[in-house]
Length: 172
Image 1 (spheres, rainbow, N blue to C red):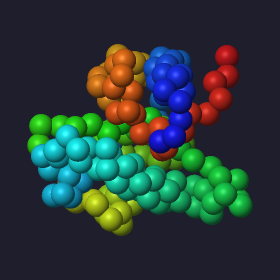
Image 2 (spheres, one colour; image 1 turned 120 degrees about the vertical axis):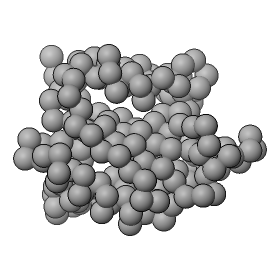
Image 3 (cartoon, rainbow, N blue to C red; image 1 turned 60 degrees about the vertical axis):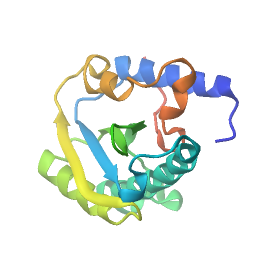
Image 4 (cartoon, helix red, strand yellow; image 1 turned 45 degrees about the horizontal axis):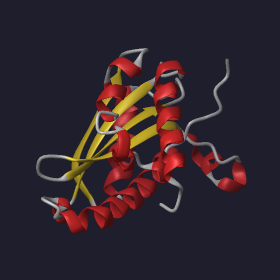
């Protein structure tokens, strides 16, 4: 990403604030894993693999938004998108992604699991390893939200997938 480092910190702070104050009543914690080429990355490969993972996330979220909002998700029809925070993490053996996604009340766990599986498996680097759980806490800052933000400290702000985060304006 070509943004200035201060912009990273500003978005990082916005994510943390939104986790504390945002409306996460009907939200889902999603964890995805990527294909074999994302296993045991060498230091010089990590940046390229993060970009590939971010692009893969973009495809996934675009398809997921279409499943949830239909034609209203298209830019020419309102550009509706789910509220979400996305982190790309270097795990023990492969890069994986965490999503915290807020949905309209009409979306239940079974439907969200189906939408996520369908949308994820249509991406170029997906494997069938996807976990979707209902986020049960109204305070994500103390639960899964904190978990996905665990690597986001100081200089490691690039663990956030800035291209795919969508936070609506905060209303007091």
